[in-house]
Amino acid sequence: DDFRDDLDALRNAVDTQDGHHLLGVFTRARVAREHFSKILARRAYVDAMHDNNDLIFLAQPGGRLSGRIRVPGDKSISHRSIMLGSLAEGTTEVEGFLEGEDALATLQAFRDMGVVIEGPQHGRVTIHGVGLHGLQPPPGPLYLGNSGTSMRLLSGLLAAQTFDTTLTGDASLSKRPMNRVAKPLREMGAVIETAAEGRPPMVIRGGQQLRGMSYEMPMASAQVKSCLLLAGLYAAGQTSVTEPAPTRDHTERMLRGFGYPVAVDGNVATVESGHKLSATHIEVPADISSAAFFLVAGSIAEGSELLLEHVGINPTRTGVIDILKLMGGDLTLENQREVGGEPVADIRVRSAKLKGIEIPQELVPLAIDEFPVLFVAAACAEGRTILRGAEELRVKESDRIQVMADGLVALGVKAEPTPDGIIIDGGPIGGGEVNSHGDHRIAMSFSVASLRASGAIRIHDCANVATSFPNFLGLAAQVGIRVSEEGKA
Image (cartoon, rainbow, N blue to C red; front, top):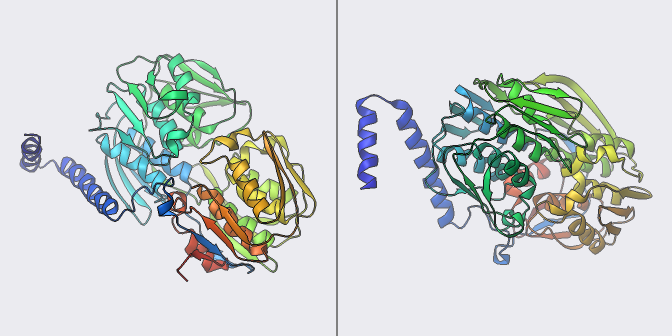
């Protein structure tokens, strides 16, 4: 009966020449077919928890870097372009969209809620916005793979919808804490149920009237801030979020890019309901978190010079550049410009003799995703590097402090984890076996470490690299890092 109803709806759309409806049905159907064929090939949303799927990277020692590359688009901006483009009025064009599984999970979630989205094709996406109140109930739970950003930001948007939704994810995401968004959303009037200890799945009850509030975040987190600002688009009155330290401000910038007023006063961001989002054109800059692997690689491999093109240098994200410079890194920003409200530059990196430092507290939130590869820089630096105030690293895709420390120690580096950071003494790096525990950034960081290793490094559990950096091995080989899937030259 459902199938006949759907066919009747299609026939009606042809009759009334409703091309928009047909486009929505067919784009969703095509993606579904591709997804099924991936499932049949056992490739979809690779489950990092199954060792029989253990993808091993083999990184050969030595090498130097040269050339010019453009790393994939910024993941944070790709996520937000889909969310705000879907809620805008009119058609939004996105270029440079990151076609990794995390951002595709966000895209699929909005398709499931009735938004017509064409693409992505070579980074181009066309989003036919439905307005702030145009989302429809999804046919089932929204599956968000490994993407914590999708789950935390969507929970803010969905708390104010008229329908119930369930947010689920893979085994890794299902272990991550969601209370940090659920608790303040409940204070705004949302009804949210989670599994034990605030973990997914999250069940969000529709039909609630949210109230604006002033929230002081106990811990700096761009995801929590963005979640509450997105809920604030629907909440009665004003919603203000005060952050204890600066975090990435892509949501504020992009809301303004869509014509929605946001007031930022020092460390307080405020929105109020009653305005609308208007479609726009978005060019996604290259992701500085992805560029960071090559910035460190170019710094530690002798005789290297590399140019990274069109990298986003948003001041809330450039901690990795500041920290490398403090360690003695040779980085220069060229051709600085602004694209769609986001500052962009080409970054030239040359090899340098790095020295250990105590990382300044104010830079910690500005480099939170880049620390795994910065730990590799510290291992190659002369002297001791000390990181404090980074407890958030323990609740990322893995406990990044412990996992990096274990890997560095396995390679002969002196690394001592602390509750909120790590102490690393630079010295020679040997070869050996390390486990990334399904964490893409750790797998890529140890690939970079091979540049200064005395023997080959085998890195286990690397399947999730595809979620954030689909072309990592190709670009690494292009510039001179000798890493490949084991068994493939």
